[in-house]
Image 1 (cartoon, one colour):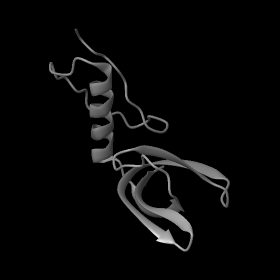
Image 2 (cartoon, helix red, strand yellow):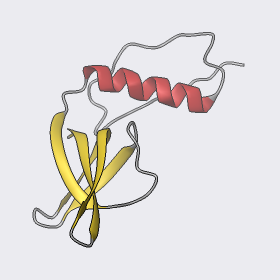
Image 3 (cartoon, helix red, strand yellow):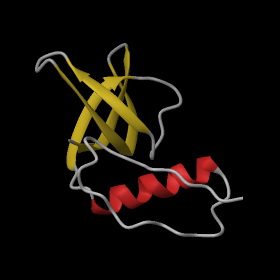
Image 4 (cartoon, rainbow, N blue to C red):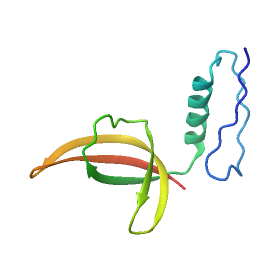
Length: 100
């Protein structure tokens, strides 16, 4: 079975090399490989976010952040997670690479 997909970030105006690998036989694997290849060449901006605790947050997840102060949304990849307590509030500090 041959899997043929296009993985795109943003406007998709900077195409990369085709990936030909006979071991990629499922769409989920192809999507993951495509994201890894994009991440290797993408110029990301490191951002630290302090958010209320949410279970299930883990490194490698792609997130969308809605910035209410700037009125814009952006996407990034979580590269680090720390949990802590500040008074009665549980917080998570996220290290995120922001991709514009």
